Image 1: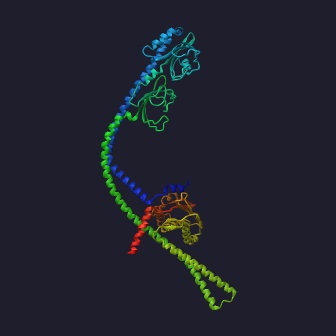
Image 2: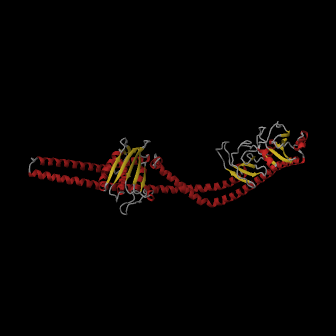
Image 3: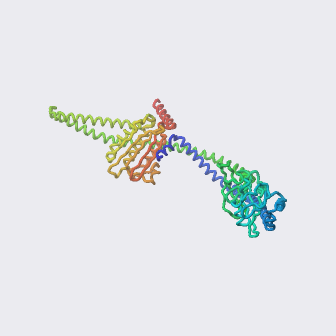
Length: 598
C-alpha cells in the first residue's frame, strides 16, 4: 500500500466539526490532568509512600514465612529419602547375598522396614547380570531382567542410586532406591521400590491456602508427583526449569490467559533443589490469595486517598470547563480571522487572473486594430478586384474572427471565476474545472517553458462542493508548481484525476518536475507563514490556506517530494462536504437572502 492510500484510509469520512470537538476533549483532559497532578502530588507522595513501605514490609514477611515452610518441607523429604537409603545400605552391608536370597529372611527384613508405615512396596535382590535372585512384593518380576535399565547402570557405577519416576515392567509410575555391594568378587544389588502413594502424601502434605500446591520436578521438567491443579505425574511441566542454584528461589509468575491447560492466574513460586536426587521442590500459591490481607489494608488506605483526590478532581473539572469555554471563544474569533485571510487570498488570486487575462486580451486587440487598419486602407485605396488582395482580405477577416472569439472566451472565463468569490455549494465537474484553471494558467507556464499534461478520468462523475474554495486550492498549487521550476529551462506539470475505489470521492494529483522540497521542510510546508521561496516572493500562506480549505471540505491534502526530482500533491475531495459545512453555508446564504429581502 502506498503513502497516498494510507493517508486516504486515515482521513476518509472524517468530519471537521468532530475533529474540533475531539481536540477540545483532548485539551480538556490535558488541563484536568495537569491541574490534578499539581494539586495531588504532595498528598499522593505521602500516602503512596507510606502505603508502599507497609506493602513491602508485609510482603517481605510473607515471603520469608513461605521460604521457611519450603525449607522445612525440603528437609522432611530429604530425611525420608536419606533414611530409607541408609536402611538399605545397612542391610546390604550387614547381610550376605546368600542370606538375603532366602525368601523368609528377605520377607522379615521387608516387614521390619515397613514396621512404622508402609513406605516400601517391594524388595528384591538382583545379580550383576540384572536377574532377580529373590523378590518380595505384589508384582510378578522374578523373570524380568534389568540389565538395560537406566537405574541398573547407574547403581552399578555409583554404588547407590535414587531413580526418577518411571513406568518399568509394572507399567505404573514409581521410583526405586538401589544399593550395590561387592561380595566374592561379584557385585549384587539390593533394590527397594518406594510406595508412590506414601511418598506423594509426604510431598503434597503442605496446603497453603485454597490455591497452594506442592510438587517435585526432575531436571528434565517431568512431574515426580502429581500437582494439585495442573498436570499429572510423569507429564512435562509447562513451566521452564531454571538452572540449579543454592538456596530457595522466589519467582513471581505472571498470569497466562492462553495456557493450553486453561487460564493461569498470577502466582508466587518458591523452589529449591534437593541434594539427592536432583529434584526441584516447587511450592506455588496464587498471588492475590497470598497477599489478600495486604491488599485489604491497601484498599482502606486508598479509599481515603481517592476521596481526597475526587474532591480535587471535581474542582479541577469545574475550573477547566471555564478555561475551555474561553478557548472556544478565542477559536471562534480565530476562525473568523482565518476566513478573512482566505477571502484576501481569493482576491489576490482573482487579481492574478485578471492580470493574465489582460495580457491575453491585449495581443488579440492589437491584431484586431492592425487588421482593421489594413482593411480601411485597402478599401480607401482601391475597390476589391484583385484576387490576391481579395484573398488577403479574406484572411484578415478570418483572423479578426479568431481573435474576437479568443477574447470572448477569455472574458467568459474571467467572469465565471470572478463570480466564485462567495462560498456556495453546487455541482462541480472536476475535469472541466481543471481545464478552465489550466487555460488561465497556461500563458504564465508557457512563458517559463512549462507544459501541462492532463490525465483526466473520463468516467469521473460530478461532485457537490464549494467551487470558490476549490479554485483557490488549484490556483495555489499550480502557482507553486510553476515557481518550483525557477532556474530550469523547461519542465512539466501533470494533473491526474481518478475516482476512489470506494466511490466516496475524487483524487486529484498534481505532479511537477521542479526542484522538490527538502526533507527537513516537508513537515512544515502547511504551517502558516512558512515558505521556501526567497524573501519578498512568498508569504507562506498559500499551502496553509489550502490545508485549511481541504479540511473544511472534508478532504485532505498530502505531499510527496524528492529534492531535484519534483513534488507530488494529492488532494482527496469527497462527493459531499461535511454536514457542518453544508449547514454553515446554508445559514450564511439564508442570512444574505433575508438581508436582500429587507
